[in-house]
Image (cartoon, rainbow, N blue to C red; front, side):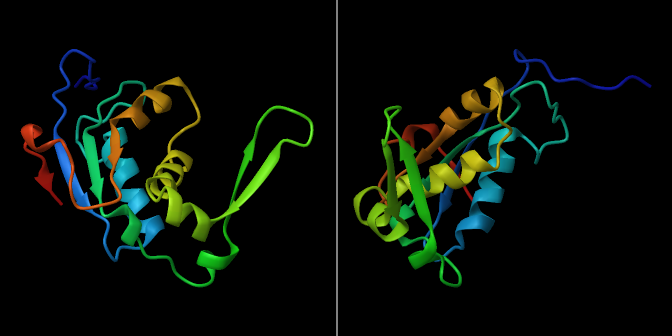
Length: 140
């Protein structure tokens, strides 16, 4: 019996819609990362992008457990000396709530070229509206 290896040409990606309202950030990010990688399919192949597209709505209403709301900080670096900036999660949630989910999912993907391509299949929106109705996403 031969081992099946998926090919880029044979993969038929689907679209999924996930409502983040009231869901815990880490648990949601695991689900999204597995769908984007294709880990939920029987045809999963690590070196081929077999994943599907994911639309996450209501990103501003994501839940966090414990004291993560006050303690969590995001660091950015400009490349210059003294160019580090730290932002609290509360600030990020007020200005750009989709960044929180994007970073959580990015941290759960492998750190390589194919993962950067996979991350482009994630679409996050702060509200309930999204422009991808034509793709007929399957609601999870």
